[in-house]
Picture 1 (cartoon, rainbow, N blue to C red):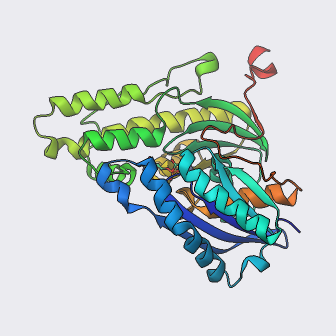
Picture 2 (picture 1 turned 90 degrees about the vertical axis):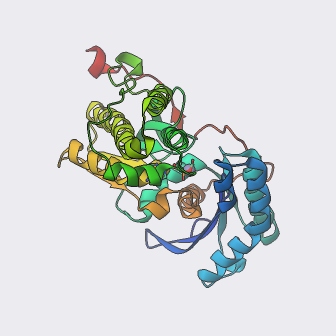
Length: 353
Ligand code: KG4
Ligand code: ZN
């Protein structure tokens, strides 16, 4: 069967990753996962696309070979290949997609192009096998901030998204203002833990929005407020932790309140968090606490929340098992639409009645 044992490949940004995922007796079993992070970008304060493509090109073959050998298999033991086709850095995507297509074509295997965010959406299923739609999902990464009603796999209703910066991008830009390295999310989380609450209070953008904008996000104004606080601080070394604390609290407030409101409005008792920012423990803890005991909050562990090929294999396995494959003509796309996404504004019976 096409989805029985899937090789996943992910090269959309600055991680070269491959994984082998088996589907047996109705369950997913992760047989291997290799994630090679490209350290080179740290000295530039952000991902340099040209360097990312070059590094993927140099390592993708070895990363795939290693994932296969860690799983105790070869391409002959694989039933299908799932590879990120978009969105992401176009040159970086192209390396993984071309490698995956070539490998699949040579071995006579079905190949499926996976949407990177659908990968993040499937990531929690690797550790929570009972997780199934319907649920509300908050996807927060370096490039996206999406609130979805997941009615079924492949049936996603867009509740809201960011109008400007993504949540992870806000962490990274604020990190730069605070003089931190890239990516700044984990470091801001660490500093915030040491910071004093209430020393710096930043705005909660779009929190009061109503109507169609009630689930929309905006983070660029928050970044401007942080810039002002940094500029007026006489002693950044003293204030850094408190500013990080104030910033993180503002982001967490907006993300938790909108997600919980979406779950209540959709009448759903499960919230799924995904993407690199979902590694943030303050976010997860606040979500669990504020959602209350009647709501289940599901989150993958940090290794599976950050970019990795296991999540791509999980989404790909599901699509391959229902008979989907991509054509060999499939191209990488930096702005690929999420499959199964509908944007209909549901001021449904409940809102209008
Ligand atoms: O999903 P991801 O690994 O890559 C993309 O698809 O973009 O997300 C990366 C983003 C970065 O902006 C990074 O700063 C942020 O996730 N991030 C965090 C944390 N760990 C990673 N943000 C807040 N707190 C964290 N602990
Ligand atoms: Zn990602």
